[in-house]
Image 1 (cartoon, rainbow, N blue to C red):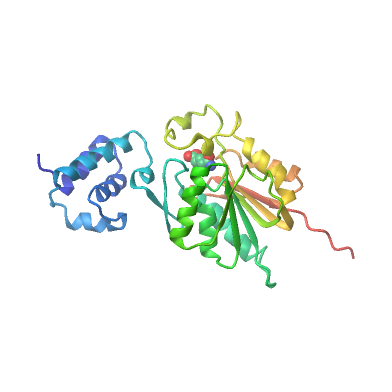
Image 2 (cartoon, rainbow, N blue to C red; image 1 turned 30 degrees about the horizontal axis):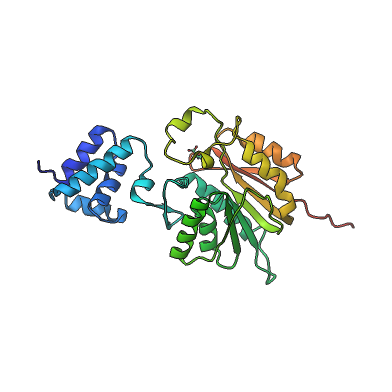
Length: 286
Ligand code: GLN
């Protein structure tokens, strides 16, 4: 059987893949970079050899079985960085760029500082390191730390940091347990899907630890909100990603914990995807 580029793409689409996924997987089977999509257009009639056909078919089957493209390729672009990704960590979503943009805005505005003391940032449940590394890359002047309870995730995050030559300090831990320093900014994309949620079937390849958080999906968010103030400097900010319907509850939890300027930000789909607030500062007495 001979198969050319154009036919391979059509076959995969007929089986149910999107055009984009088919192109990414075919480039991978041909040992080309995912940046080379234009190459496919100029080589429509290039014939695949047997090994390439078999590789592409294997990748197609894995994708049809709902494995994230990032796991098949072994990497993913996030906020302009290329990160190694494997099935020990969440596949970084474009939605999470909302959290990074908000963190960077906060460092630029509310936390902008003329002093020489660098701002300290902590990323909780860092996974591949995506959020921490994106912040550190955009703001080399800031001290970023990140933690995760999974040793396998930390190993990958560390590898990403080395590869990108970014000096993030990683440590193992469960949320803020045992963290005694204080930070100017704490960010997190914690697990937030309720146990037994229908979504989880299609997310079955990703680690449950990074996705599921108790019956209501709020277990980790509650834990972080209730412990964050003790690890924030006065005037410091806590910014959290959460589920599509969790913004009102998260704002309520933040307000109850004494955070001020509690607000939410929308993701690219227009959904309130992150909520956060500022730890109260001592008021000036007039
Ligand atoms: N945003 C992911 C999803 O719903 C979940 C990520 C998470 O739990 N932090 O597919």
